[in-house]
Image (cartoon, one colour):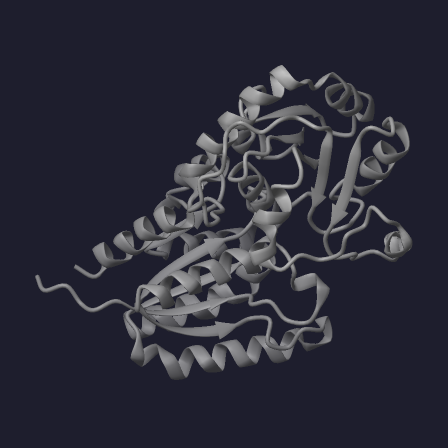
Amino acid sequence: MKELALSILLIGPRRNNNLDSIGGTTVSFENLIYYLDSNKINHIIINTNKYKKRKFDFINYVYVLYKVIINLPRINILMFNASPRGILFFSFPIFFLTWLSNRKLIIRIFGGDFYSFYLGLNNIVQKALLKCLKSAHLLLLQTKDLIQKYELLGCKVCWLPTSRSVNVTYTINKVYKKRFIYFGQITEQKGMDFILRLIDSLDSDYILDIYGPILSDKYLFLKNKSYYKGILNQDQIPNTFLNYDVLLLPTIHPGEGYPGAIIEANSCGLPVVASKWMSIPEIVIDQYNGLLFPANDFDSLLNIIENLNVDSYSKLSSNALIWSKQFDSEKINLDLIYRFNKLLV
């Protein structure tokens, strides 16, 4: 059978001027768009963040569905990219519209908490949502834990981990100089209280700098601190990371999947000290490309940092570079498009 030319209707969140839009989901979505643009793959984009304030959710909803209806005749695959909440609100009408128009439906779910979100729904909504998920031609999930769970539920699952550009080879001979970085959204759930306690607890020969958008009024005082360095553009991240030795990620965020910061750090030779939380142990292998501590255990975190030395660091840094290569966006997206083309045969 003749293979059709791939044409994708891409629905997902783009970055806007709202600080909430700065994060892993928008970066992952923008990376996919960049890949499609670079490889001249035909696609149409519908931005689910067009109206950025929560009170505009209904306007966003109507806008997205209107754009889906008018663009469906022009494509053969619809790829819907969303968090669990977005999946719940949009999956029913999108499933119906793709079924009605005989288009292939791909659902990509960001984060690592979709199963707990699903279990929290009432039985009627659960069954309806599962029918939509099972009807999708591919259900793209970020973690292997989610893959296992939804495969057992009968979905056509595919692992789509967080990916980043890993196209520069950095030296594997980094020397440990006690330079630590936190990079991410600045919230209590991301572990900012632990970061601030570390700054107060570590000796003066340690450096610990903070980068990222401040999303809580509780941390606005950081703007007056020398160790708060602001928000990085995506193209500033590699060179910034090269000025540090270790990424810190003491997260207890309930939606944590595979944080892109881990891949970005590893690709620059930085091992990661992270909490043993959600699916973090899938991407940070303890004593290999990083070090794990029990979530909410500050003493364990402090002990790991104070016991890190030049010898143990060298191996972790070398392994981090090797580990990051499997999450290269070029490789991940090439495989994704191959799967899309197979659906059209």
